[in-house]
Length: 147
Image (cartoon, rainbow, N blue to C red; front, side):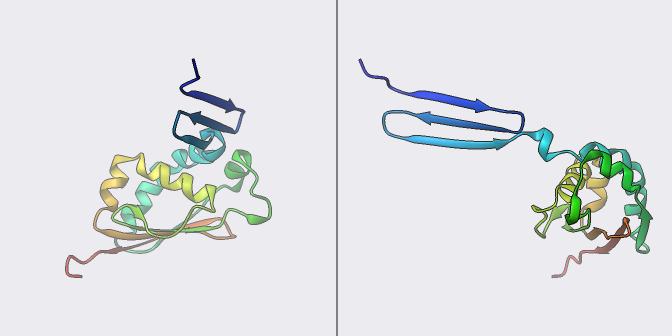
């Protein structure tokens, strides 16, 4: 009798690797641990009430407010790469590449978790950015139905 299939799983604190083999195929998957990927999510969730207010105000004029750098440094050290990023949203969806910034990815995850913010982002183009001076800027424009 021959072995029909098998699955092997390797886990460590940061990653999970799975190897599955049956009589005709071999599959390999890699998953990063959410703890590593979402180190700034809790920090951003604490800022959600303020961000919600500034998104609403940004419908009339651009908004800015200063972030506390210690909040982010305690969540994770970005070193020379810093905490700067830009997120461009249309109808609540990211339209630029934020894959290189854990800070930006976690902000987007926090925004998606808030129903009021999700509703406000519909029919809007919103640019959210953080620069070296650690000021979060929000610029909103309405998306025209006549494109």
